[in-house]
Length: 68
Image 1 (cartoon, one colour):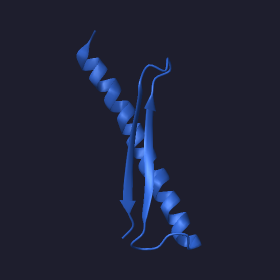
Image 2 (image 1 turned 90 degrees about the horizontal axis):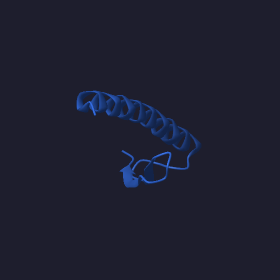
Image 3 (image 1 turned 120 degrees about the vertical axis):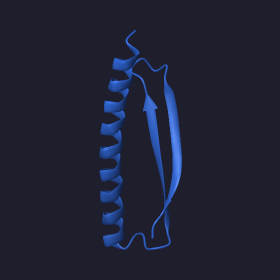
């Protein structure tokens, strides 16, 4: 296996996930803020689920984001 190629492919995937996820979270928070459903000082719970097509990989990350 070509370790350098594997590293590049994983980094491309993570870059896409990171950029897209940040944009989606920002849009969600702006919408909720505009609607008055959240305000400064509130926190929102977010999670990210990573899985493989064959179902053998499953990993979740949960985090609380404080709105300032």
